[in-house]
Image 1 (tube, one colour):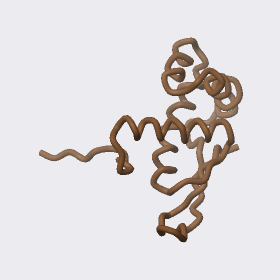
Image 2 (cartoon, helix red, strand yellow):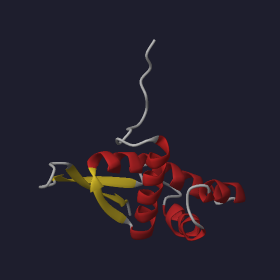
Image 3 (cartoon, helix red, strand yellow):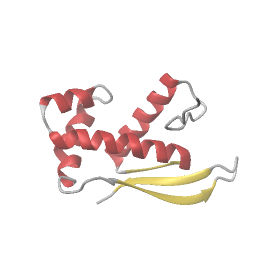
Image 4 (tube, helix red, strand yellow):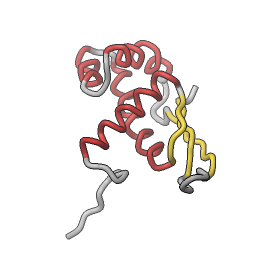
Length: 116
């Protein structure tokens, strides 16, 4: 029996897809907002929200889990600046704003940002 698979492949192999999500999430955490395609924005949103939820705990184990994906400066920013803003919020830490199509290839473009 076929089962539905969760997530998008983004025309990449698994290791390339993980690297892409990590780099997009890193830029999202450092800059606050990024401009990318709609499919990538939706995938990064899921990944980034899970990382923020881990950062809300602010324990040593949570920092080690975050350090699997990010460098020390990003882990510090997540646990010290970003996650405390969302202490009382149960989820929905990112917002996706659709911008339309790109002229060159017609890909749908979106801005993903952290909710204030």
